[in-house]
Image 1 (cartoon, rainbow, N blue to C red):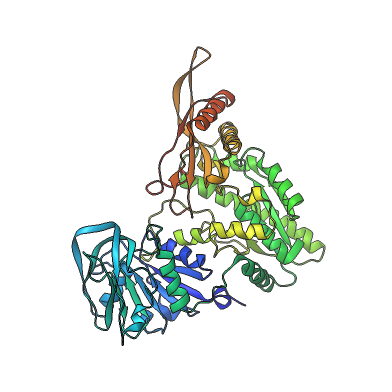
Image 2 (cartoon, rainbow, N blue to C red):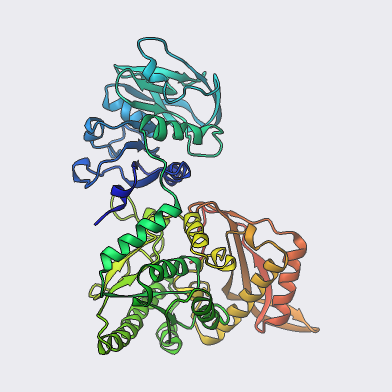
Length: 533
């Protein structure tokens, strides 16, 4: 079966724990080159494919720390170009015998790099920065730097405080830069990455969603075969809808979409999803109303991880029961068996699960990566696993999915249960559904929806004193959240016009019984997460 690395030239990015590693992946893909992020501990000999080039990321560590992560030495004997960024530069220099030391003051922020053009016989060392200005504005973020360059390397860039800002090997395609080309604060950064992957690695710029559709549909058909049936959960969000439409395009009615109404969906969500998927997309949809079962199992539970596990396990139980019912019908008709489960896992989900030191401390269990029952009978199929959110939206547009659905904000798998910070009851769900619906209505009415990456309301487990109709009230508090984000790995809160917030607050406190106070969350990610739980 054709794997993605067989279909596209691939850049391997080895992650040493940098907060910017995912951005390197995105910048490569913006040049239409497929890139994949793996832990820096990845053994080259264990790869089933050969990358066209390798990029070593930055890191919060120092290369001389006792517990510092180190790259597999086979990286430098694989016969492909290597680019080290920040810590990656220092790791490369250290590997080849250079010396690394701390700097008196951590260098963080803008810096001007003097580009050094070498003459014969070292012209090959110029390839990464050639054609750029003599002075480059870049973004630095480091507390260590090279104090002595390794043998065989030449300096091709320097600043007043960093004499080895950019180095290159005299004869091998090994390059290192102390600054971060992946961040937007380095104006020519994307171009530098492009020079490495296109000019030096000679990657073919063939990674597009148009080509992905053709190749992925062919892969799905090969994987599923001529008779196997596939079931998949849909929520009405862009991820599950695009995955469902792609699967429908590949195998038609052998794909069965299942909407599990877990009782914590948005207001009128089940009916809206059924109309959109069936009428607009022609997808074969089954609706399983299990709201009472979910709410019964969630009764009295406040811990967010418990909520996730209860919802995840109950979902699988209901899903398998519905799948068995569908399978019985399919077998009775002599059309095969249910063998595959479709999941809408995206690449950021995968990235957040990567750690070079093994599983990291649990922040929260992701609803798409992990958490499946151990005895699940179905094989997973994840057609969107390699895609970022913007790529999924582009794919959706190519599949003629309606614009309002393609641009829809993300919605968590556990639904409103993780936006109700206390116990989940039908009454609490109804309060949050109404408040959230008003919030989104007003955002759309103000023409702001497409400027916001994600917006939602949270029901807090506290009560506040208020005055309504000359009477004292003691009711609950709604927190509003709206963020802007390029890739959901980092996010900034959205600056609403005050008049819009005023109208939203007024409508919620007047129209939603049980709420007398509205707040707005102005936390960024990091240090916060986008969701509260």
